[in-house]
Image (cartoon, rainbow, N blue to C red; front, side, top):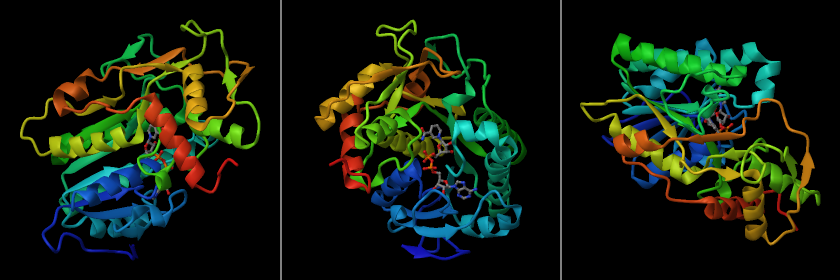
Length: 338
Ligand SMILES: NC(=O)c1ccc[n+]([C@@H]2O[C@H](COP(=O)([O-])OP(=O)(O)OC[C@H]3O[C@@H](n4cnc5c(N)ncnc54)[C@H](O)[C@@H]3O)[C@@H](O)[C@H]2O)c1
């Protein structure tokens, strides 16, 4: 790893991809796949959440993308680059309710700075991390990309505004754009790249087990087969592969769509996920039932037809692989369960 800023890239003729937030959970997986393809990778990350060791042999520019004073640094980091994958953002829904202006500053202004730097550096291809949170509480069991966007928290709103802003850049300077709306990301492609945050179901269950406590199920009276909420769990390595497919798509002369769900189309209930973690870990995962949480829809599963047809991407790893890899990563990390 090589920490410096600013940096001029692309000097040796290799394809260079700039990954903002590449020291984080999902970004680090994409960085590793790009490096394995022999590409040059520049990570721009403020290391507020991310960890420098996760970027491996990529060059690391430590900078806050949301600070307008850093646009020249960003522009320099992008110069000579082929494409940008923009992960850097804040993603805690509850925190976004408490600090909405900061979320807009971080997520929306951060993307604005990246777009300005892209235009100045002449980089045309952008893959943007969007989210199923853009849909809010959809009616359909299987959500398509053309569903109404009706986010129910500031985090989801920042992603909708980010998509709008990026679409405007398509019109203004010819940006080539793919917005990927991720569903529930979990698992680990490598044991050392597990999800360090305890915000989603799988790490929340693992944290409870580590503390010798029963995992919680928030509501078991939903209109679903076993009464618990159903979500679309995507293995982080499948998701990382979707980014590679998206970058390749942006090289095509004809690009019929700019927004893609990244889901499996298969729902799994909270109970099923907890059961799989029990199978993977060999631990007793008997859960306790807690009250419903506000804002949790019964079903949220993405229709993956478009990404399959247009990008040729399909998830290839299921819930057993997600649970087993998350367990392995948890054991490999600082939060080992004795
Ligand atoms: N993890 C999920 O389930 C999920 C679901 C939908 C969408 N997303 C989106 O995917 C992206 C990546 O998520 P993740 O799970 O890898 O999160 P993460 O927190 O692990 O990674 C985000 C990275 O961005 C960096 N960062 C944050 N703000 C920054 C800033 N202003 N300047 C520079 N660096 C900054 C952090 O240090 C971190 O390394 C985010 O945009 C998130 O909103 C994640």
